[in-house]
Image (cartoon, rainbow, N blue to C red; front, side, top):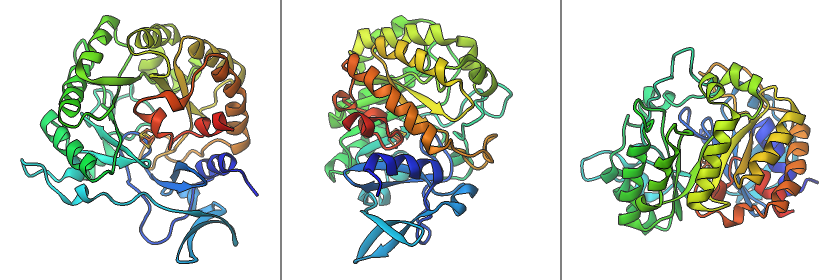
Length: 358
Ligand code: SF4
């Protein structure tokens, strides 16, 4: 029998075969090619579409008038899917389907990629694991979401009690703020209209003083995603982030914490890109001591990306990385429970919060 946190790690590495056509969305930012499952008091976004999923021992099947997660033929635990929100069937006042503006992520997060194009996408500078424009190409979303559209969707989602917080991300844009201004305008409109806590994700900007504008625009939490703290891995998979370097990220996390407080700044750390575990742990300690939470996620190979044929890391590796990170979090008094909004509060993509609870 597995604990909830062990099962979450297993499902995120192996994937889950789902019944029917319930396989999740194809491209986009965040947990693409996956689906959120609720079980054992947690929520987990798990791969459901990549080729490797077909050989997973885990599936979801009907049982006792509901659904259970199975390992081969053995039922493990009851599972539910987040409800399909009613706002998905509505349109904004300019006629745009609301499901093309923002989606329910995890169990209660409204998420949107405000600008669905990235200046690096399709160039040698692009991140190897990213599928941000795939959902645009498939017609599942629109290129840019206006503050008014996002505010309307946030109000509709809040009114039906579908969401309690908001995550806004973006592809990198041209200009000195790399697109932060559009995220701030969106955040301010959402906060004014709905009052929901808002998380935004951005680069470690050359002018970190721009982060001083976050609170005044209704931003509660900040994601500055380095993806890997191993320089060689970054050079191979995220060349622009490699050029920025760990020190620049560290300064940006520190500035974010200065502006928004500890537990309100995080960074995705992808496990399974070939990183050096010792270097990774040393640098995770540095970022944690700076007050930023490492949101450790297993590599999610997305069909249609450069890493589409890769496999997620072995669950034993992920589990040991998480177990070694938890004491660092408690030493620094960091906890997902104190995050006001965003991926850390959602926790569907990382099992680190579940290990922290244990
Ligand atoms: S953790 Fe972040 S990316 Fe993953 S489902 Fe939640 S909001 Fe989306």
